[in-house]
Image 1 (cartoon, protein in one colour):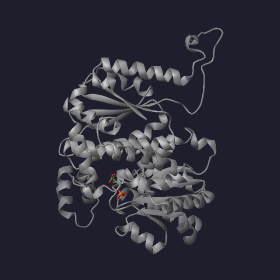
Image 2 (image 1 turned 90 degrees about the vertical axis):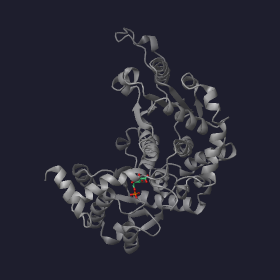
Image 3 (image 1 turned 120 degrees about the vertical axis):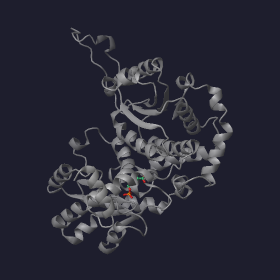
Image 4 (image 1 turned 60 degrees about the horizontal axis):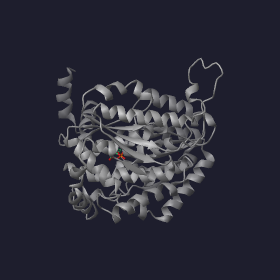
Length: 444
Ligand code: PA5
């Protein structure tokens, strides 16, 4: 992977970025020496190279066993407990996976509280052999807990207690939380989310690895890609020749210039969920104390016909980070037509990817002209190895950016506000005072 910044340096002076050399090396030191805010959540830093071989083998074995008896695998989790897995799976599976007949298909639950979604899922589960992973570090999150209660009962009704238990994997804290107690009582296969790895940094733990292995993806390749970037950062915690540092510093500079919105751009729809993963990572890590870049995402050229107008001409508080994919997995050329009624013969014979690349370059220059700096991250292809590289790249850059912003990148105190109100409105014990206040505000 390569980081291309020429089109950003016309907005941010190269020398200004270079002046951050000492600062960035000190910031790495804060991470590695565990001296900064949230330092008890830095387990992800050495994780790629420290993953136990026995854990990888165990995950592969569990996946193999469950794959044999499952046409569908349901991943129950929310936020960091499902987005990493979904990002990798959707990036690597066929765009039309549900129609290819390849099994098992991975689907998701517990990331919403939609009655319709869950009812329709249960109707499908009536007709199909399935197993599931219930993933919650805290073991108490409402959305996955509701989905698990429903699906657990469904499994028991369908297969009986014993077989149902053999189709459930619980991924949670080693001791705390309702899910851990339940898993102990019912004898589910269990994997541990390490104490020092927060949800949004947990894709290279069983949280991400089991669902990814269930999708038939080589988790060793994913880990190997992450190891490469882990080692690169460790051996070169500078700005020179380290794209992670450069990305962190450049986006920090852009933020200082009033570019308070970063748009993750892809030209490959298979990367949509990678952007979703990135948005959670950056949004939850940096959006606090009334600070932080707002992370957004678009898929081009699709969204050039919707959001393109705003990006070109709207409020100039935007910059883009483009994931540019050099090589497609397949080859397809535009056919020649004798009558050329659609006037496309000028590109006949060209690969679709060539047209897509020209759209990408043309858009970059147009947006630059419109006052939108464009950072480019060029990857050779979308593969498990490259996704592993990108995961570690963005995780480390997220930690560095958070420390440059002077926030704790590893907590998420703001997430509690909606939960407290929801519990109060649902009449949960202990929230009586809040219930009365909220009911008054709502005129109930
Ligand atoms: O990054 C985080 O910590 C959060 O997004 C969590 O992953 C999310 O809230 C789910 O939490 P849990 O795994 O405890 O159910």
